[in-house]
Image (cartoon, rainbow, N blue to C red; front, side, top):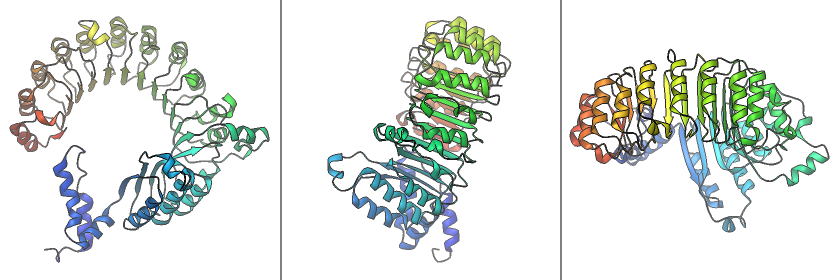
Length: 485
């Protein structure tokens, strides 16, 4: 049989073997055992691989091993490199971190010319290694790297196919201040016409002047993510920043308290195409209210994790100004009340399709809230009530009676729920395709088995492995239900 299968057919078979879930050891064994059949199968398995993720040690032996390893995978289109934490006193004597990471990129440039996606978070890299990468990996359209200060971005220009760029910034301002003082900053370089559509910046400060060039050159930007940023570069000026806002559709701001008000203000003034906004861990109540009240975008998705910065007046403004909202996600929002959510539910009753109230104590604090929301939000397709530990059966059931169109339901760590909730779910939500009941300790194996037997459209169930009986597993296989533990 082995002789009858040509190389091309075997490679096609290997490429079609699905990636096993992380929790499934049996499926994983069947995939890795391919390489143990023969040297021929090992070679063909490697050449059929298009994606690889590696965790590396910061030492010289890694360079030799990586060179040998990548030489066996000539058709990689996606590569991720991560660094395993090690004792810095051991590795510093051998090589500096930047030199080590540059050597990694040079190896990637030599052996992975077909790369389309590269995620290298082993540490900061230099411009020279990035120029070498652009010369060899001409198909690269997604790049994630770490840079140290001072920041220069002229190396981005040769990446003609680059659509997604993620930059993690590290290091102090000491040396960079000298560059700025004597006028050697990237701000003086001519602007470029970059094709980047998705940009993530993490760790940027107000004195990172090189970022201004990037703002002015990203004229096709559709998605912007800011994480742990204390500034937007250019010495705190927003003049360059507003150049990239015109066509933005998605914005995510995480842990950027010092700049979130300014960013939201400029979005409201300069962006008319925004459809999705996420703000986590670092809002400003007044700035957020001004944005909601003055934004003229047709927002479709709002996602907030603002324990102390989201209030009822924000909810009222959302209901008044964003009639077309289809997705609303609130997480750990402690200052909103049931009255505020009810008013919002009435305002968005005709269009809201996804609602998340994650770890929001108002769900547990105010009896009857979920029932009222369910009555006004009958078009809901996705509902997430995870991490509401004191949510009880009565409250959930009262909502599900009205939510007959649900296809996704997340109840992770709702430890107060029992079998009664599971019965209500399959009786009232007959279109459900995905359910998460991980860490719901009040729901036992019998309830899970009953749910699997009675669910008609279910395709994915997340639950602890010890709650899956032999009968439930057999029926799940028969119904093509993916069980994720």
